[in-house]
Length: 430
Ligand SMILES: NC(=O)c1ccc[n+]([C@@H]2O[C@H](COP(=O)([O-])OP(=O)(O)OC[C@H]3O[C@@H](n4cnc5c(N)ncnc54)[C@H](O)[C@@H]3O)[C@@H](O)[C@H]2O)c1
Image (cartoon, rainbow, N blue to C red; front, side, top):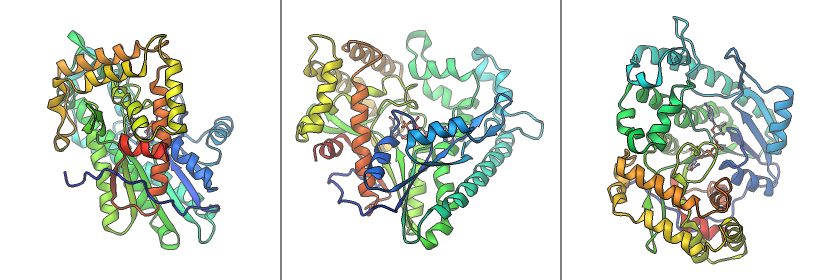
């Protein structure tokens, strides 16, 4: 595929320094991807600035963080947060008849989900309102940011926004069937995606996970006139992991955000064509607040254990491996974990999903059942299902990814780059 550009060589050291400004566009959660790049920016002595999506009051009003929430968020980030709500999406925006999607969806019972009628005019109306709100608030954020940038400083933006499942109780049982359903509970992702609710989700994912990056690039045009600005964003488009001793591209199925992630790449490609230094880094599957819904997404993380050894087995890599060993059940070895993960990844059922050009793929019942059973089998190898080795492995990945993005973003070769397990292991062993 033309845009497939796996990073194979470690990037040169970036030139970011004290006085340069790092801006996180999205909130920082304990196990979120952004922790990696925030740590790198801090190590380089950059000034760290954060943003917030704001909070919704019980009457639905979007508001900035209150004093307590702000203090907590700033302590967590280790930097000032510009307190203007950057929530994206349109699920709470009322149309002319006073009804928002959140209101409409309240009236639909989970077993009648297919009765939802998609109305393009309504979508266009509330989406335009949501975009206007987001852009207006973003302009406010940029206005507050500008005086915080010293003359001659470089600015690095990291966009970490993703999401957009409309807030309605109806989605919980439905998405549980799509992402965790087997047997009678299985609901094909294609059936869901083709429904009215699927079309609604698609529009919402595009807005939150993709177009916010485009809005950011647009809203900071004036900044670029006086300052060197670089943009990074987190993508997902499958990932190469070790399967039968070789790095092979694979992906989590059904990744319904995938179309939005391709659209995110398109924003970086369009920006780069105009000479703007914007890069989407496609990253491996890890466990975060956002990926918790996707049961089985963690399966491709296990082979990282082998990559860490093959990539040099240095002290950092060994530290992560030791952490994993401590979490495994007595008598369970890393080799046993690797073998169980290989059994899943190399299963013939998975071959139907091995074409990157056909991504994103829809689920099949046999694939979902294999994935869910394999996920449970591997989780059972840990002492506690609540504390599994995917936690340290996820940390290893976001740490490696953070360093790769941070340094590569200084002079990125392509607008879209894949950070696979090989380069992450190399980075962690460097
Ligand atoms: N977890 C994975 O396996 C994985 C893999 C590849 C890429 N990514 C990407 O990494 C990025 C960070 O995600 P993460 O997995 O670390 O999870 P996370 O939950 O830590 O981060 C999600 C981010 O999305 C923001 N967000 C959520 N809803 C929003 C809304 N309506 N409007 C604006 N912002 C909103 C949150 O503030 C947060 O910054 C995302 O772009 C995600 O798609 C994740």
